[in-house]
Image (cartoon, rainbow, N blue to C red):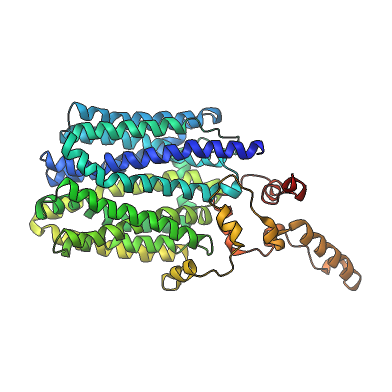
Length: 496
């Protein structure tokens, strides 16, 4: 196995362990914070503060440009901060009071806000451009699978061991995953450089499309996060759900999210997936209606399924949309401004919902308003991305086998270190196509005057199979000739 493939396999093994740790941490800690706080006597206003915690931390993302670390320290910096944030929940062995949970959550979310913009550069330097999109998809599947397995067990563990020990167990597993990610070797890339908050906001001022994207996220998220703190109230106060019941509901959401990652991954491998994000907005946006009208816990099963599918669609679809609609040179500054603005939205939304309840309107109007804003946000996102949600045809693209590479390529997608089987797609032989065009242009030249001859098209204009579109999702940061060399392994090397 060539050295490059050995390094990719090594990096993937460490990242896979990190993804499993993240999935277990989310299932054992993050998903139960609001439930534990409610059991400990937190009122709706405090639940709103707990829900606003991650967004309060995100508002500081616009200042992260001041402390972008040197390239050689980037991986260790990300891993160390992630471990530190998760280690805070070891304090659950001492106390699980609402105030303590709030401060633990704020610390953890602050570290996440600091490392999130840098993670893109780490991935760019870790995996070749031809493999990056598939690898990140597999890591998401592993993370979701770990959460799906741990979801029902977490409800049983918290009833047997208690709240504090389960939080500490989740923190420990999360720290192990983060420590594994620190062993990844990230090569040199055109890394993001330091920038000021003013430079970040200037990108939004100069690009109308970026403003439309942020507006869609603000409207959709305002409705979603205005309703989210009320889910714990519905589960605990209305349905008297046990920890085990909540664990099974979360299992339904995790399994549906896992299946959505796999199905949407097939879809994105065939089609341009810009419509996936508005679809995810719509599915997740109507979830508050299930909490409003559900006659019992079994009915909430469908709400958690929609939430899992919608979350997966947002995750996969937005990565594609951001890379497709945001220029490489703007991406980190846009991401910082986007995160800070949506963070402010996330801070305000839960308190607005709590204020409406305190005025005597009850939980129902807040849930209904959240669903309406979710649908409006989905429409705004579809317009910002210039897609028609009514013509997505996702299921037909998934079930069908239209314009698909040879089956061997499909099977090899699951083997991260294998070379692409380019011999099944001969039209991608760039050298032969360019040579043929040069010969044709030379033959036609005598019949034309001066510069009126047909110009040679650039390699980016060559026709190509849509099935290979996701291979360019993570941006271009290498010379074109080098990328072609990566994707088209010479026959001699294949034979060796």
